[in-house]
Image (cartoon, rainbow, N blue to C red):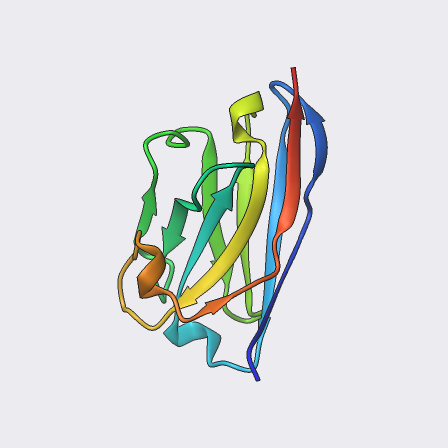
Length: 124
C-alpha cells in the first residue's frame, strides 16, 4: 500500500521560509515523478511544482517561480519543497503526489497517489 506523508508545515510571517518534506513508501520511488499541489480555503487544488524521476527536470507554477525549489532524494524516498519569501497568498494545505509519468506533470489527473496534506499559514 502506497503512503505519502507530508511534514514541515506551520505558521510563518510574510517573507519567511519553510521546508516541506514528503516521505513515500509502498512504491518504487525512483520511477515516479513527484509533485506538490496546494489548496486554499474555498479554492480548487492547484499545481505548485513537480520533479522528474531522476530530478533532472523541474516545473513550477508561475506564482512560485524564483521563490520555491523542489528537490528529491531517491535514496531516502523523499521529496522536498523549499519555500522562501513566503506571502499570505501562499497560505494553503500543501499536498505531495506521485505520478507514473516520466517527466514533470502539472495536472491533478496525472497523479495516482496523494498525501493527506500539511497546513502552511503565512501571516501578514
